[in-house]
Image 1 (cartoon, helix red, strand yellow):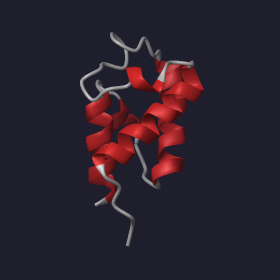
Image 2 (cartoon, helix red, strand yellow):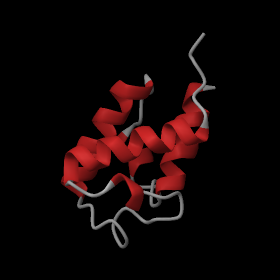
Image 3 (spheres, rainbow, N blue to C red):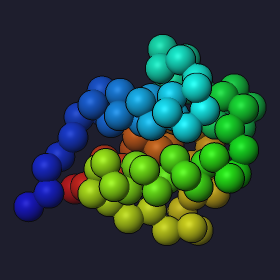
Image 4 (cartoon, helix red, strand yellow):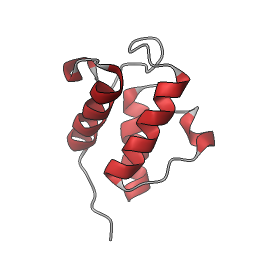
Length: 84
């Protein structure tokens, strides 16, 4: 049985990953922020973030799902549902 991580824990984990990948302050990573428009994360960085998130949260995020992850909230919800 996979450990279900709370929204806040997933958000904090994603913020740490994004900080490590881009140098962006973790406080800038909020649910309603868009990866591209607000956080200025390009597709290459996004793929690295996805790989790190898969490792950290023990989930699989297929390439076709990545294009639907437009906001940080989308990613949090995806990870939470993938763990369920």
